Image (cartoon, rainbow, N blue to C red; front, side):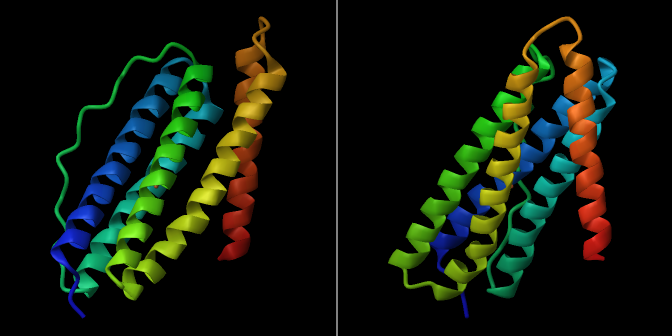
Length: 174
Ligand code: FEO
């Protein structure tokens, strides 16, 4: 099958959004590393890698449906952040934006009777549900810790424990 030009353009926009997320999280990771927050660093590096994978999946899909994936020009992400709390709020907001974009893509695919793209996008629906839940969980923990003198230490420990859980889940999946 061949994808419509409309759908192809919309998926290319999504490529760009996922690519930007990958670079944004990488920039956040480096900021955390500089502050000695190694748990946050590892967490954000993993999220950045995942975003690249989200981008690459669309590249592969477009190749399968005789479309053309465009390597995006990535807007420069911010390099300075106010706080680790602000970073995770921004990540959560970005994930909510991505979810909206995925929903819009599904709406377009449905209008075009493009069942193949609708089916392809189901993977992203599940992924976004998981990512939003994960980020809400992180924000809940950060809020519970509050902003006392040792809060950064405890936030980093929390992120470290989430990293360990993720590594265990990955090992079990292999
Ligand atoms: Fe690819 Fe986290 O959105």
